[in-house]
Structure formats: structure tokens, C-alpha cells
Amino acid sequence: MQFRMLGPLQMYDDRRRAATELTSPLQQRLLKALLAHPNTLVPASVLVRELWGGRPPHKAGNALQAHASRLRRAMERAEPGGPGAARLVARDAGYLLRVGPEELDSARFRLGVRRARALAGSDPEEAGLLLRQALSRWRGDALAGPRGPAGDALAVVLEQERLGALEAVFDLSLLTGQHRRIVPELREAVLAHPARPRFREQLGRALAGPRVTPPPAGGGRALRPVPPAPGDARSGGAGRDGGAGSGELDRLRALVERIASDQHALRSAIAQLSELVGRTAA
Image (tube, rainbow, N blue to C red; front, side, top):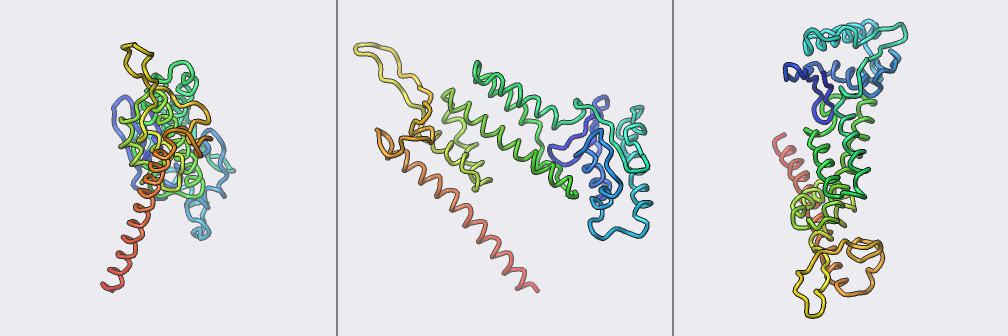
């Protein structure tokens, strides 16, 4: 079975190719907290805070035990004939979830990213393909839905890893001359993450296009892309104050900044309109 965290939480049975989602918000919080610490005993006091925050019910220990039993039965239904009952181990001090690395989509994603980074220096095109395959495991926001502090922390870490992998994909695409192909993706990334400057820098480079070397005197060879060198103006490093094309690059940077600013202003206006409509309706 797979525990899918790169999107809404799912338990996926590979044999039946069937996904099971928990309908109980408290069971979702419980499973997400356990998945944040796989194969580790999580104290009952921690799990109580995960489920109810600072307002636990009367006899919270008994309530936690009831939800753990329901979660165990849900895992058994999600994986008929599997080790469902043995996965969730109850001990006096808390609970432990037994799960192998191959059963976590987050672990498979991380493995793909590591393989891609190891290959980036020798085969950037293949590394880019591996990164895209790893990113294809994502189905939405990590651990979407109800979650407690441990689930929130894990979701933040996974999202940062996703954005880092996406930045690496764009870097490899720029290195291999795929500037035009990634412009739509970069525009979407800039609008979705206006506070992340790397995407704006990469969009400016993609819009500028690859550098080319002139053909040799009297030659007939076609122009070819030249990857930006460290510190080159097109790489977003040094050299912004001079050199051919620096004015055009500044213009493109300004365009990217304006796109991000316009998107932020649009979101603010929508929020203000929604608030006004709500007050009017009241």
C-alpha cells in the first residue's frame, strides 16, 4: 500500500489500484501526524494536541484510542489481506505507524529528485526528465485538508522541496536551450508565488532567449545556443550594469515585476470586493 501525501491524503492499494480517503477530519489529523514521524513512537499527549489543540475532550486518552481503532480498521479496508492491523501499534506511551520508504509517495519523490541532481552535471536533459517525473507525483497541495501542527510542518517542508525541484527543472531547461517551452510554466509559477524571486529571474532569462554565437567568418554553420556563464547578465548575476543586451534584460525584469505586482493587486481587489459583498448581504 502507498500513503499518498503529495495532495489530499490517500491510502492507495497497488494490487487493486484503488484509493481510499478518510472522511473523518480527526482521523485525517491523526494519520498525518503519524506520517510526519513514521516508524517512531508518537506520544499520546502529542497526538491529543494534534487532534484537538488546546481544548481536548473529557477523557481525551479514551477518545484518542477510539479514533486510532477506527483508523486501523480503515487501513484494513484500504488494503484487504495486508498488514493493516499490524501497521498501527498501540503502546502505553502512544502510537507507532509502521511504513516502508517505498510506501510513501514523498519518499519516491525525494528519490527521483536525488537521482536527477546527481545526473545534472553529466546529462542535464535526462536530469530534467527525471525531475519532471518526480514532480508528476504531486496531485495538489501537500496533505491538503484537516491537519494539526505536525501535519502543517510536514506540508511546509514538502512544498518547499517541490518548489526547489521546480526551480531546478527550469534551470536545466534554460541550460539546454528550452527557453520558449518553459515561458508559460514560468509565468504561472510567478503568479502563483509572487514572493519567490527565483521564478521571476528565470522568467526574465526565458523571455530573453538563449544567447547565440555568431558563425565563423565565411562559414555556413547555424547559430547555436550558449548556456549563460556564471556572473553573466542573463543568469541574474553580475554584469547588470553594462554589456550588450543589459538594457533589454532590465526591460524584461521590469515586465516580470509588473506581472507579479498586477497579480497581487488583482488578488487584493478580489478580497476587498468579497468583503464588501459579504457586508452588503449581511
